[in-house]
Length: 318
Image 1 (cartoon, helix red, strand yellow):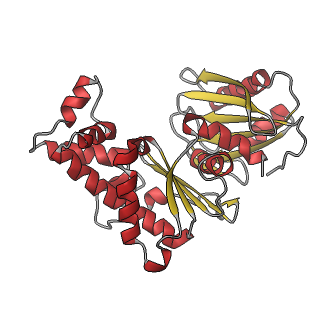
Image 2 (cartoon, helix red, strand yellow):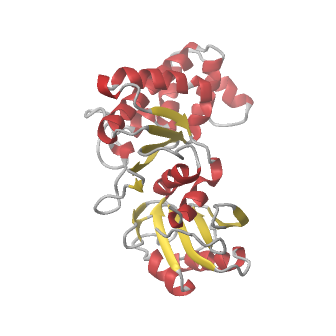
Image 3 (cartoon, helix red, strand yellow):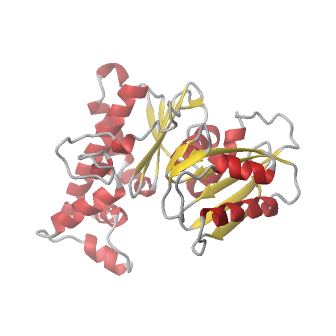
């Protein structure tokens, strides 16, 4: 990571998703000076996606002297070599040497990280993790993503794959996960798991969850479960109680493993706010061993939709 001491240094952050590319120009204080967004739907090759990112960098930089590009990519990323080993929803997005391709095209340093690690670093440097020494970032959404900061450094591990907490096994004989194992944490505590649990209970029990989803013209999701819970729906209360238990179980495992002073919770499920956090904090405190109690705090993420952009750019700020 580069420490930008000179105020005339600029960095571009890129958040690459399955359907869009977001890019932003940052100054040395981490402020966004310019931003752009582009769809990736009609890209046919990996080279086309990379070329679009290169063009966006030239455009968004507005001729400022950019000293580095931080890039957050979905999928499995070897950050040390800057290679995306396995991607999602992008053409030919496997074994892509992003660092080399983009570095050669731009003539500047490029850093590439998994999107969950980018989000973790962004929250640590600029968001809800600022000021902590050891932070665990977890996003509860379609699946569970995570990133770990220990002693002020982003934990990557031997092959840059550290922090896959969503695939810690919490129920060995549980349902099959897309990773090939059974009973992974995200099968019990993700937004998808909350939805599936609600749908199963609703087969034999009346609930306003379906009514709320229909009224909004949306498919049933965790959001509707929490909305129904706020209105004292008993099925929603049962689903939320189960989800909170498993969320806390995973957090307790992370606390015992990493001994963080702060846990930052992001993702769509975190938007449940006071319907989630008090219960989650209480359940986690019950599950951790006594010496750990009171040594950490659990807080909502602070950077919202810009977290990937901010985290990618922050790779060049210490």
